[in-house]
Image 1 (cartoon, rainbow, N blue to C red):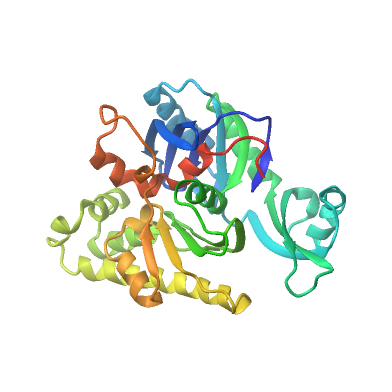
Image 2: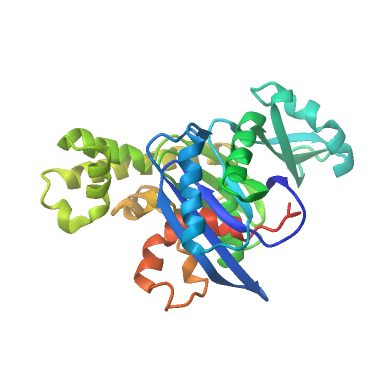
Length: 354
């Protein structure tokens, strides 16, 4: 699903999260991908809150730093958004052509969107015949506030780049997974992207997204709990969180704090998937793919697997993408892979895709 796009060309994926920015550039030949550029840098605290830009200048400085670091030549980029300013909803409408739906989508969308219709940009994808009513078809509706889109457009322009595509985080993850790992026509997979502030859940069946949900839980909550328990600054707590089990042993009860966080996240994922099953009782999720920085929290994969009794995979796109060992060490690529998923999916976008 592409919310906004221009003409067709290869793009650079720029994943602007609430905690960090990831830049990904790929080359493609006969369906195989090679990493041309990858870089990431942390953002100052609270420059993006709930998907809304709070301090564009600080973000522009970070993006410019990545451009300089990678000596980026291709200035045409794809970005993605999520948060409360984005609405994703599956609706049922009368059978009609795509052209007819284009003419009526504003009216159809107005029934489901909690914003004034003139304040949002709308995109849609026809999913096929409704399973309960053959006279209707299912449509995936995406709406984003124009104010949010304008903020990101200005941000990209300020960094000296050309914005070509605005996608949604969940769909960028889906693009990456489908292109690199493949999804069977009848296979049902839950793709869960755990960011700093938000977790995106997207349940797909073959090429179709059946269910999406954003959950307000992420790695930032763990950092804040460590900060509170040990009287640290946010940066000190973040460094301790990322230090790994060997250093955690020096902090009393830190292992319990991390384990409790994993239990909370696993519970939220289970709650989201229970809602999916309530809508699709006949479907069975066969695999869960976890990605994002939060997915790398030690013990989380095991917690989700034990709670849900489903195969759980930590997604590393660089397992399927070639790269030069002279430019990128294996240890580095493997350590950042799960965090690069959205950026990789964006870099696979081509303008004009649906």
